[in-house]
Length: 321
Image 1: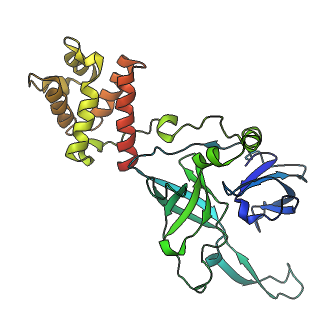
Image 2 (image 1 turned 90 degrees about the vertical axis):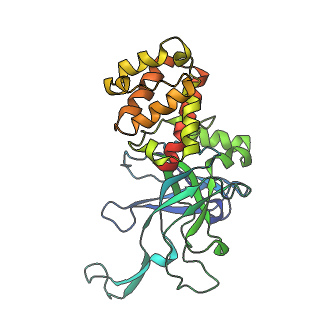
Image 3 (image 1 turned 30 degrees about the horizontal axis):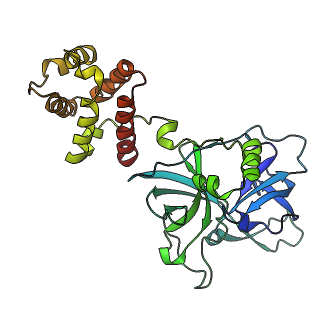
């Protein structure tokens, strides 16, 4: 996680005075390991911060603070990924003679890189993210979960951590995992624990939601994917921009963006219906809608109205992108 600290789920570590062994790149040529101690373990957030206490002389430079973010509390579904060592990845192999005297069978858990999707409005009361994944076979029996060992895995959306895998609720089925949301940490951690997370793990003092942290590229076919009601939402947001409500605002915009749009400019007598016609025209010319949005951002600078346009487009991009 960083040069001297890692995070995991609180329930996977024992007492706060326990000495742990942390392995990196297990059973790989680049494997290295070190002892660690528990700095804090929060049951409410199911989060533990570990300090690496016996670092080797050369620590890989890739160990740097990650970026943390949250998801908007909105009707969106996003792509996520995580890596862990669940029970169903248990393997058995014969150790080669040059690695052991007996060559006896050994058992190990291999890594599992899962790609899944999070539907943001699920599990809000629990404070977790519901991660939908491909289900493994259920061959471990009724009293155990094939996902045992996945706890503590960071859940990534793009280049940021949005949660940590905590539990597999058997009632949800084999294709669902629950991960504690990063936003939950700000509610459940003590102030001293938050300060340690800020200092040692790079947790920001105030979490930016994904929609505020970056503007994802607009899908080229976004206007063809949205439903009619959503197209009107985009229409109303754009029609409210001050730069378009001034005299000849729409004409000036279209001349700057693309002559094809200017030539087919709708004439409806109402800015709302003219913007709606413009969006329908943009469907026929890939890339023109993104150019329109870029021009509007330049014109509006930091207006509240353009922030609302971006909010609407972010939500639709997360849904359809």
